[in-house]
Length: 278
Image 1 (cartoon, rainbow, N blue to C red):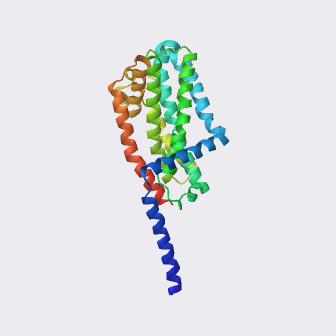
Image 2 (spheres, rainbow, N blue to C red):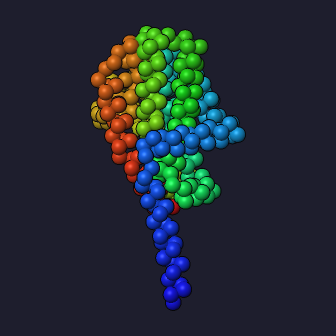
Image 3 (cartoon, rainbow, N blue to C red):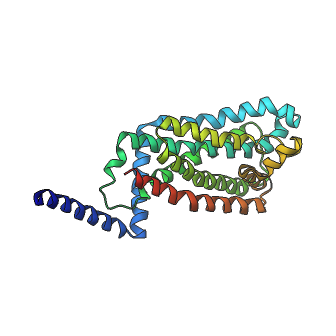
């Protein structure tokens, strides 16, 4: 009996030592480990260039499609529709891009990649935050192509370069914060397909039931009431104010506040759920 208890105690003590080492990870080490995981994710992107297909083709396709299909019906002509539509496409593109974060996380967990990290004395947030830092490159490409396509079609943002850059940064910040929601979904869903389905069910209604593509005044009263409180509408209005007028409105503050709340809630939830699956 004692020969069986002794190895068990040794394993418990070893696990306690590993757990203690994890608790001693400093903030500087956490940042370094996160950046190391981000570099790993960037190298993975380089080996799998198909990860850039959505951010490369979606902005071009959606910008052209929405402009020529809805421009005449909503604004009278394509040129008049672009100042309304381009910030909406920017928000939609960045937000749909962040859905891939949870899907890729679930795929890595299914392949056992994260099993290699569980015995390492690293911050538990590093394997989650690292790929999200790498995804900032994808958001930047998507946002740049959206405005680039708009310029090709004749869009001339009144906010100038500064306003456009501010709008892009705000959209990237919002996409990065919302990615924590899909990261959490990735840790609780049973498959990558489930993550993708859940993410689309969450984000697509919020995107299309917003002021991204149509003026709120044209909507029925009950729908307009929802659109006005939709967080995506706040983001779209904020990016329009920045890109078209270089105006830092209250919508920018509301958007940043919402980003902070989402990160404060879903980052700890993601880490906790991730640890339960280890």
